Structure formats: structure tokens, C-alpha cells
Length: 504
Image (cartoon, rainbow, N blue to C red; front, side):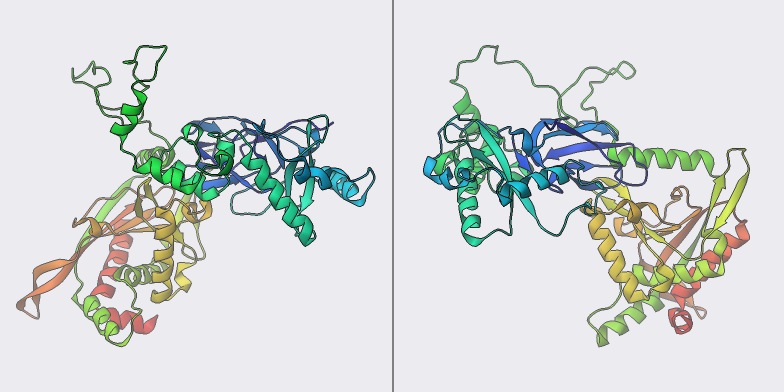
């Protein structure tokens, strides 16, 4: 007899050791298939969905949303379909006529032989569970399982079915699945069929377990969730007030992160503590990385004011002849890749051996990191092989990476492979910043806002578009002359972009 399998939280990439459980996509008693997403977790770099390597019935969920789980620890327990466990106790019995044909197959039929082969195949699981990749072992046929009820004994067994079965069988299977779901206890999570309904409830904090369904057999419909979302909190409290309770009403709920209200008194200042926010996820990694950068890297900073009028005029001229014109950051990124080719010392990394000896590692190419502010914190996705891309290609890739980073969907490779970082903090309305180097890189270039300033042109005072460039660099890999030469190269390219672009 098959035993319950425990799926351990896998390494989600880049050797990350932990992940925060954001939400479950399944509940205890649900029947799941191989590669079905079972949970959403937030790593230090992105938010990803974890697929199941096993098919069967969910026996146990190891963790609650908001909890941090270690890689290699249990995530979910799955009972294989051959054990015969039921996903839920039905409140009402489905019609025997709906199940009759499915239960009349004699032993030894081809369907049973195929089922046994399927169960043997499933014993090994799917293998590879890295996010963003499929799991091997399949044969191009999507499989699903459903519960079947014995006609007399009342026990429920499960048999695997193929989606590619005959049309009549497929229709019967769909009707049977719908019937079983509709006969589950109303108000339970299992009474939800639509993934859209589950997602909507999760995003708006609606408790499906306490929500009555208006559909047939207590099925929770989209309109039920929408009604719960639109119902004012005051009305909910008014309904709940008359209910008899066993405990005193004033009992307070545990404090949530970022919650308001005084949470004790700070011994040092004597002030009330308004909130306690755990440092975790992206914020934890950023803090660790920045502290390491400041403690290990002897950094220095150089800066220069730049007349960006020529670059602005060039871009305006391109707009007149084309709808798709690269943004200013894409042009500056193109200048940076050209500058790193001339000053490769700034496109390196320092590695320290176990004996304490150090090496400067140079790269054949540039993975240009683009600092992006997101709701989860500061992340730096990188444009791989940026030196091979035109300004238009850089613009498209920068926009794509920024978008996926803000959605929390950037891959570990995109977030951890940069060799040099470009930071456009001018979008926040500031002129300059002595940025912290993105360890283990050795330099970061910052671009301030572009504003009108008085500027001397050919001996005459004029109003020009001026920005400030700031370069922070690791003094171990180069001296000030190299850093200044690189910064001046970028400044000259911005002031006279046509000359440089003609040679690129």
C-alpha cells in the first residue's frame, strides 16, 4: 500500500535558504495533479509559485501564510490516489445513477491496467521542482484524478483518468467532478470550483470557510465573494454582535506587522511603540547586502554636472520620425556599456579564497543591473549581455525587467547576475546620491534629475538641461584616475551623443 509522501520545500534558485509562505492554492482534502501550483512563496528575490511533484490528495499543509519556511523542510503531505482516501465527507450522497457506469468495470480491464501503470509512474514524483521549469517524467498527456464512490460499502476510491479519453467518457467525468464538488459541505473551501474565485478571495482577505455559497449545493460563486468584499466592515460587526460567545468580547487579536496602536513602551525613549515590522524577504537581503558592502568595500565617490541638452535634442529629433524612441535611460545604458569596454576595471568582481588571497575577476561581457524600486523593496534585475544590444533593444529589455521586478516575478538569474549597476534616482526628484555598491560588484553609476540650470556655452550664459552623474567605486580595483576617466567618458557622450553613437 502506498504511503503519504512529504514534499520538502526545494531550493528555489541561487542557494536561497528560506522563503516566506504567502498563500496556499490548495486545502486539506483537495485532489491535486503533478505540476499543479500548490503554494505561493516569497523568496529574498521574487515571488514564485511552487508546483507539486506528486499527484494525490492533500493530507497536511506544513505552514501558515506569513510563516518563514526553511529550504528542505516539509511543505505539503500528499496521499497518493491508490490509498483511496476521500477528499472530503459529502453532506449529501450523489445519485447512484451518476456513478453507476464508472463502477461496473471488471477487474483486469485495460482501464485498470492503465491505472496501475499510472500509479507506479507517480511513485517517483515529478523530480525537478525548480520554479520556472516543468517536471520531467511526463509523456505529453495531462492527467487528473477524481473520487469515485462505491455503490454499496460507502467507501470512496480513486482511479486516474486521462483528459484525452473518449468524448462520452469526458462528459461523464466532468459531470461527476461537478457533482462531487457540489455535494461538499456548503461554506467549506472545497465548495469552490473556480480558481478565479479563490484568487479573488485571497487578494481581498475574504475567508471562504465562513462564506455561504449561493450556487447549487452551496457552491461559492464569484458574486458571493464580490458581495463579501463590498459589505462594509461596520455591517459585518453589527451582524456578528448578537451571536453568543463563550469568551469575553474585548479579547484582542494578536498584533500584525505594521499594525497601528501602541504595542508597549520603549525602554530607551519612553515612547509608545506604534509597530514592529519584521525584517524579512527582500528587505532582509537588501539590509544584509548593503551592510556587507559598506563593511568590505573601501568605496570612493566622484561626481560631475553634465549638460544633457544635446541628448534631449537628439531624442526629440528621433521622435519626429518614429513612434518608438528609446528612453533617456536606454541611451545612458548604451554609453555605460561602451565606457565599460574602455575601462574594464569597473566591470569586475573581487573573490577571496579560503587562505585569504584575493583575485580580481574580469568578465567577457556586461550584465547591466538596473536598480528598480518596488513594493517589496529595492531590487536590481540585470540586462544580460547588454553590450550587444542597441539603444532600442536596451530600452525594451529595461522596461520588461522593471515590470517583472515590480510584479515580484523576476527570476533569481535576472536578479543575481549583474556586473555593474545603473541607478536612475532622478525619477524621485533628487540631484545626487553617494550610492552603496551592489555587492559583489565594484561600481554603481547614479543619474540625477534633469533640470534647467544656467550654463556657460561658448562664453555666453544660457539655460541648459543639466543633470548630475555620480560614480561610487571600489578603490581596490582601480584608482581615482580610472574612475574619473570612465565618468568623464559618460559625461562627454551625454553632452555630444551623436559623435559617440556614430561609432557604436
